[in-house]
Image (cartoon, rainbow, N blue to C red):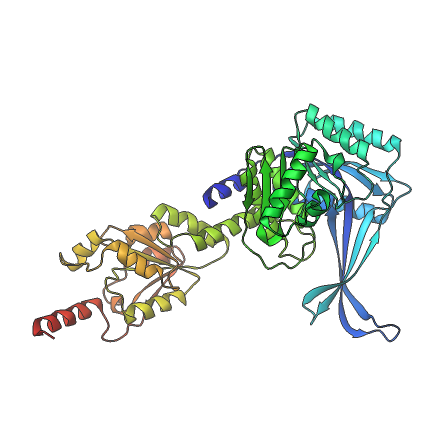
Length: 495
C-alpha cells in the first residue's frame, strides 16, 4: 500500500482549485513569560518575535500550494494593514488573489495568539484575541462573488468551501455555489462550520467534519467507530452527499460513500497543536480527488498529512516531501528488512534525501556468534543505516566448500533481521560483493581487521566516490569455522 500512496502523492500534478471561504490572518506573538504581573494575576509577556501565517481558507490555500495545486481564492478582507499582510502571504504561495474583495465596514478576520516560551523553548498559548465581524454580506457583494465564481468554474478541476462561520456562507449563497458547481460537473468539497444545521451543504460532493462537528450536526455523540458509522450515514442520507469523511483524530477517519462504509485508521501521533488540521485535511482530499484518486486512497493520504500537521505548532503547511518521507518511514518500519537490490536502491534514495549515512558490510554469517554481534554493533556506530550483503547459499559453497552453509540463506537472513544493528539485508550470488557495493554506493564500507593485508574488495570504488573504508576489531577466538570444528571434535569424541 505504501508504494501506491507514494506514487500517488508524487504524481498529483498541478490541480486547479477554486477555494471560497473565510480568509483569516493568524498572528503569533512569542515572548518570555518569566513573571506574574504586579497589577493582576496574569503573566507578563516580554515579546521576542512575531509571526504572520495564513489562517482559515488562507491556510487551505497554503496547504494546497504545498501539494502543487494552483489556487484561485474567493473571499473578503478588510481595508487594513492585516489585509496587506495576508495578501502578501498568499501571493508568496502562488495563489491567485484577484477574487479577494476589500470591504469597508468589516476588518480582515484576525486571530492573534500570545505565546509564552517556557524555558525559552517550548511555546505555550496564553491568550487568543479575535478581530472579526461575522454578519452576512450585502446582496450586491454576494452577486459580485457569484459572478466571479461562475467565471472561474470552467477553469478549475475542483471546488473547496472552507466555512469558519464568519458570515461569508449565507445559506442561499452557499446553496448557489453548490448548484453552480454541480451544473459545471465539478466536485464540491466542504469543511463545515461547527453548527447543528448542515442543510445549506446539501447536494455537495463531500463534507469533512471532525468528530465534534459531525456529532453536533448528526445528533450522535461520536465516541466509538460504530457511532461514527451511524453519524456518517445520517449526514449522507440527510444531505444527499456523495461522500462523508469524518476525521477522528488519533483514530483516523470514517469514510462513507455509496460503495464504501469503513473506518480508515491512522498511526497515532504526538499531538502538539490541532490548529489547521482540518485545513490540511480539506487540502489533501481536494488535491488527491482532483488528480483522479479514489476516495479511500485520498483519505489514506489525508490521514498522513493531518498527522504531520498536528505535530507542528500553529497553522502550518505540509509538503509533498514530508508526506513521502513519512510514508517511506512507515514502509521501512512495517516491512521486511530483506530486500531485493532494486528495492534496496529505492529505499536508500529516501535515506540519502534525509542526509543519513549509509554503512555497508558483507559476509556469510552462517552460525551467528558473539563476534558477529559485536562486529555489526561496530558497523552501526559508523553511520545511520547498516546494509548487510549476505552471501547466498550458492556463493557460500564456492567460498567455504560443499558442506557449507549449515543454515540456508533465508534462515540466516531471518536471524540477522532480528538485530537492531541491521537495517537492511540483501542477498547476493556472486563470490564477492563488488557489484552490490557499486549499486548501494555506501558512505562507509566496514570489514574486519583481518582484511587489512588481503585487500578490502570495493575499497577503490568507495573511496573514489568520496566514502571511506573502516576496519573493525575482531573478538579473539570467535569464528563460525572454529565453532563448527569444535562441534565436530565433540561429536567424534562422543561427548
